[in-house]
Image (cartoon, rainbow, N blue to C red; front, side):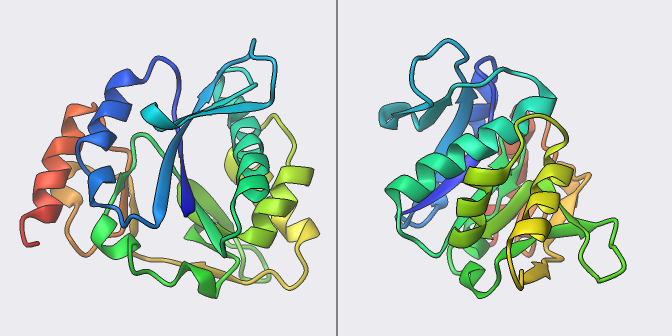
Length: 209
């Protein structure tokens, strides 16, 4: 199984429902989708509620605390799964399962939509959708700081701690996306809001399947 982390919040019930009723059922059985939800008062670092596809994490709910969710997910994932890569997206990201199911994520350590390219060609991947190799996840589980901007924190941690990091900018990941902007040739679209729009995007993407 390959875990697919979906950053969410306790209050985002309708967003989770829209994902569960659209793109998640189209995923290959090899993927295990889990919503990352905060539970600051829980005793342990994480708890997997498999029946509801939720990984509860001991952290607060704030935009700047998303790195804490990512680190908690990576700790859980590397301790429980031996797979070449993991996926991460948001609960307002539409994921085109037809393209994701067969995509060769194993070919690079870090795949996503890169922006703010730096002098050596590597920018930072947008948090809406990206993949990380097992060794990247293991690094984030140990090194990722808990508070800040996810895009900066993840990129800085990987650049500083993963030798010979390989990366790939995937152009089929579309940001600033609306229903009319999606097609079956795009791997992921973000942000899809309100939750009802997820169904519109799903109809557009799957019309030709």
